[in-house]
Length: 81
Image 1 (cartoon, one colour):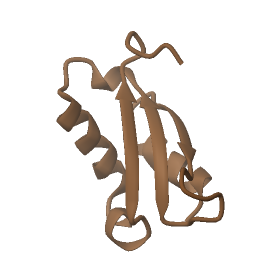
Image 2 (cartoon, helix red, strand yellow):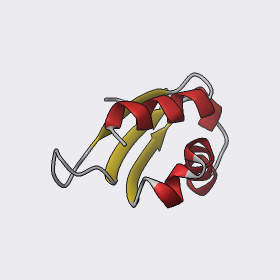
Image 3 (cartoon, one colour):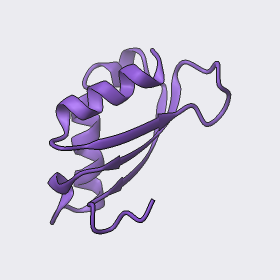
């Protein structure tokens, strides 16, 4: 799985998400990812609930294709990137 596919999965499952996905360990690593996800859908949700929303968007890929993902989640107001 590549970073673009991971980003597309998150974008399709989290409303109005802006997503940046990288491979933090090594550029050729195909099962460890890092994602920054910014969405107004996170408004009023706990960090745990925000992360769960992303995991839900990734679905079965989290157990089959993705070994680990480092998440940073923000509402648009929180993000200064």
